[in-house]
Image (tube, rainbow, N blue to C red):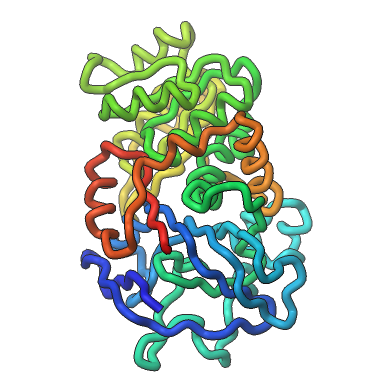
Length: 365
């Protein structure tokens, strides 16, 4: 099958023919129909997080199941499914408590040491990214890493449910617990940030402030529920402007979705008393934040929390957002800036890094 292979950090993707195994155990084989270009994949490509190469990235995938392993329980051939980065065993203490995103044994969704690799090239293993690897014509995954969705949702929209949607909306709804009347700021209005905005709207936030350097993204954020926007290049003091908008000491919840040290520190500074800052963006390894734990955290009764995948229970949340989309209450349509071919992946990421589009989606015939 054709796949976009990353052979080393800092390199371009190369379209190559690689091999994919047949499903065993609880694995399902999927014909990939669409896969979103997410910033997380871009970070793995450009920064050394210790991830082994060569690899096939891509985790926002949607497709059709063509084969299932002998022990598969929930998925059938012909199902339309969405992949999700939340890999879980289903039986550990955290899973039993309804927190599969904190699973203690996600390795159970991978093949064992004695098994042949799921992906290979010339007989040598190719690393599967987070048990998905959607930048390919097919994907072989554990059934716990996919969720069945209705066949009415177009694949290029459905694929975004597995990461961008659940991460952004889940951060607001699940992690932060935004409530009716709360005030929210979202720093960075790409695909995940836009979903944090509409998650806050869905939860009933009173004021939702979108912060970004790109005017087009700020305008788009309004369609997702932003009540106010701030372009840092157009104001003297972002913190002061946030306080002016909220008519208080700051917001109840601030979401950093870029992955930069200055904006992560800014997320703390724009909080009001008792507020929470939520780190969604991937800050490169080794970076240190600077803040006063006494003045900025303790005395202001604030918290700073990391968020992985929006604290998502994928089997519950993905069907929920899919249903809300069909009801006209959740916006997936405007998340897709353009569709591209697998062969255009490098150009697609160049556009994404340029900051002017929300999401490009690879579509397969």
